[in-house]
Length: 337
Image (cartoon, rainbow, N blue to C red; front, side, top):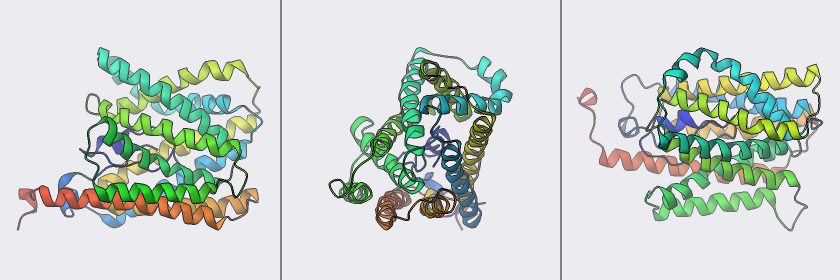
């Protein structure tokens, strides 16, 4: 899972489809750029893209593990606030650039809306990570791309083809398999993850518009700053003095999240989304293994099956977008011959 900032995945492609990881995941999974979708572009390195995505997945699973290691003693809003404040150190080199960035009325409204929904999503996410298994957090996080695809059709006017609707149906079935309502007791953490997926989907859709108006690195930095500000009052309302160990783990969380977003960018530059998207299933495998090894979490085969269905649906949507781009986009002159 990811620290969901969403800009790197949203900014690269021209038409969005779906994202993969919660923290600020960066990242709205979308179709690869037309040329790369059509065929490997000059300099394309699928193996390198896969390896970068493997490392990205390790970082994102590490984010969940460090939050769980920090424990549930600190309220979720405070944990999230500390993680974002500690993470701001990674954006200090961008301060001069931010000060020179013009702010229009439309940008201010978009940044403000995204800050609100992302703040709510982050609080729900941190609450869930400390209370349900790592595998459940990861599997339910796969729902965000599906909701983005639905939102893109409803609010951005993107065409919802029959095959995409079928894939979304499969993803929703996968979600029901993960939760199994009526067959087991659902915890507040499960509902928190559903709220997280919805909030991050709204954030990713907003990021699609923002990255058409501002540089992606600026979008990411402003999100981190505004979310830290948004979390502050919730954290101060029920402040619990953190121990040095808790601060340490949350700082590690911030570092892993920042590294994950960087490596994700490398993966998307090296290979098309259709190549890198299926690799994210490894996050679920690692979450199961790490949860069992470090936290004694039972292995739930239904969570794995449901997560596989959701991710399979996302991968199919991504592949279909690549095929559509291949049909309608002529090869670049540099690729002919």
